[in-house]
Amino acid sequence: MERFDVAVVGGGPAGSAAAHAAAESGASAVVLEKGVPRADRPDRLGPDSTDAAGILDYWVDIMDIHPDEMPDDVVLSTLDRAEFIGPNESLILRETGFDTSYDHFGFCMHRARFDDFLRNRAETAGAEYRVNVSVRDVESDRDGSPRHTVRLASGEDIEADFVVLADGPQRQVTNKVLDRFLPFDITDRLATTKVNHIAYQEHRRLPEAVARDVEGAIKFWWGYMPGHTAYPWIFPNDDNVARIGLTMPIGMDLSDIEAREKYELLRESDERIPNGKEYIRRLLEQEYGDEYDIEADFPIVEGRGKSKGTETYAISSTRPIDSPTDVGIAVTGGAMGATSAFHEGGDHVAVRTGAIAGELAASGDLSTYNDRWKAAIGDEVRRNVAFADVVRGYGPDDWDRGFAAARKMMESSSDKLFDLNMGTVRAGLSVGRVATQYKKAKYKSRSDKYVQLSEDEYAYADS
Ligand SMILES: Cc1cc2nc3c(=O)[nH]c(=O)nc-3n(C[C@H](O)[C@H](O)[C@H](O)COP(=O)(O)OP(=O)(O)OC[C@H]3O[C@@H](n4cnc5c(N)ncnc54)[C@H](O)[C@@H]3O)c2cc1C
Image (cartoon, rainbow, N blue to C red; front, side, top):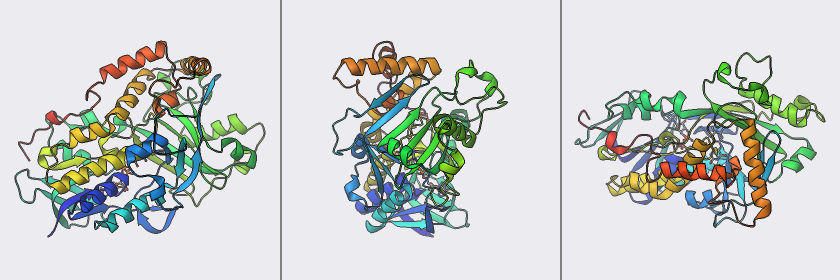
């Protein structure tokens, strides 16, 4: 049977970064990626690269990879602002407020090419990256040698001393593996329909004038769709093409929505929550329908994205989990819930957590992993958790109030909003009433209280 120091389940940003770091540190490492056909990677199978692929300036430093290190065709456009649009109020932010090594507000990238760059980087460092290899399960014996047997769908097994779980927010392998170390059913805490949001996006070519208007801006509409952390957005790419998408909770019931007439993207005739495609159609009609024929003037670009210019994928909704390091397992990136649906961002924390896991696994000791990832991304997570909590019950009027207050504050002060990040940027929240709530929520999530499953809850008796 084949044996590696480190086996990595999933070959997205977290998995590739883990393999790169492990190989750089001298370990034998293998990435096992099931392989997904994508229109934007037509020549070969690769990881599932669904993403709006916007990166803010300070994420570059969290990720610890500067765009200068990437091939030229990865960055599609640079950003100079974020626009937040409420039903009646709006806000434009031109700075994130962090001192960073990246000169622009952010950039949008070609996610499949970014993933391929990370894969090449890992392979160059000496890791093996296997595609078309689906992992079925990982069986672990804490005191065994090797400790892990990775069971593949092909029927083959691979042995490893350390396993990095990087299978993304759907956690098909992660949940099965962690369940064995928990005294309760993993779905009590980490049911994917509860801890994830759904995200949908379309790649559309914009009319020239609209493309000029959107150039350099990521745009978010808050208070237009019901549900916590539910919003549509536009991210400009290249060649007048933009990703137009949305994020919303899974399985919402329209009858639970209060004051539904206030949501611009709902209709009186709706019998259920509209699907992503319908929401995007309504958004475009509302914003541009007076001047344009949406289907004719904003055509879907079929060669981009996953298939036929559209993609639907789960995205984790904010709270990360600790890993059972004692048994030699690190959970990383989307699988650990490090992506925040609240600000859509996850590539930076996926790369960083993957790199930490790979480096420690190669050193033969994962015991500091949970402390290390908290030191690296804890502030980012804490901000996102606190803001998601603050705006959880917001309706359209609350968003208007928040944007109006934030704008006033910006107009009357040259100070930056308090520790701005994409969460604050997107929410466009103000000092004052909201700031107090924010501080309280942040206080509540101080230390590592934001963790959804902590290390001391794992029990290894049966492993
Ligand atoms: C619509 C959308 C928009 C987003 N926008 C942004 C954004 O603008 N900026 C940003 O930073 N982040 C964004 N994100 C989040 C970002 O995509 C994630 O944070 C990131 O992909 C997480 O990386 P990962 O490596 O942990 O997981 P993933 O990228 O999900 O990779 C997991 C990999 O594991 C593989 N896999 C799964 N199960 C198995 C198995 N059993 N065997 C083998 N392989 C397996 C999958 O095929 C996949 O390739 C967005 C996400 C979505 C869905």
